[in-house]
Image (cartoon, helix red, strand yellow):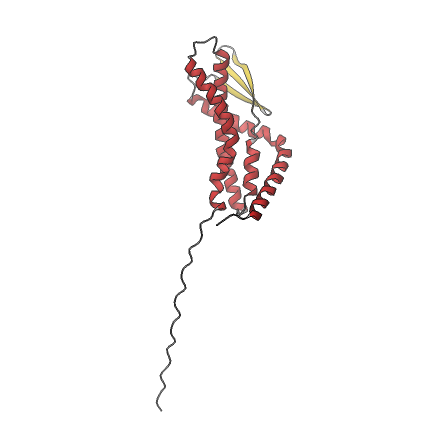
Length: 201
C-alpha cells in the first residue's frame, strides 16, 4: 500500500505537536527516566569491570560517577550530563504513527522504551569507561590502542544515541506503514438452478 501525501502531512503535524507537548513536561519525568537508566547501568557494570569499583548515582538530569574505595568508601569521580532527550523523539514518532490502535500503540511504546533504556544504559557504561581512560591515561600504563578505541566509541555513542529513536521506531512500526495487501479469494461460481420436474397427474 502506497503512502499518500495526506497521511505524511498528518503524521508530520502530529509528530511536531506531540514533540512540543512532551518537551514541555519532560523536565518532570527526566529524573525518573535517568534513575531507571542508571539503575540498569549499575546492574550491568560488573559484566565489564573486574573488580567492580564503579557506582553511578542519578542527580537530576546528570549522572555522578563514584569510585568505590574499600577503605574510604565511594569517592566522587566526575559528572556526566546525559539528558536522554531521545525518548521524547521516540514517543512522538510512535504516537504520531497512523494505523495504530491504542492498545497496540501502548505495547509498542513499552517495548521501544525498554530497548532505548538498554541503549542509554550501555552508553553510560561506555562513557564512564572512557572518562577513566581519558583522566587516568597519563597516570596509568594505558596502551594507545585502548585509548583510541574508547575515544572512537565515545564519538560513536553520541551518534547512536541520536539515531537510536529513529531506528527503533522504523523497526517497530514498519509493517503499519506498509501493510501487506490482503489476497482476495475468488468468488465461487454461481450454482445452476435445478428446475423441478413436473409431476404427472
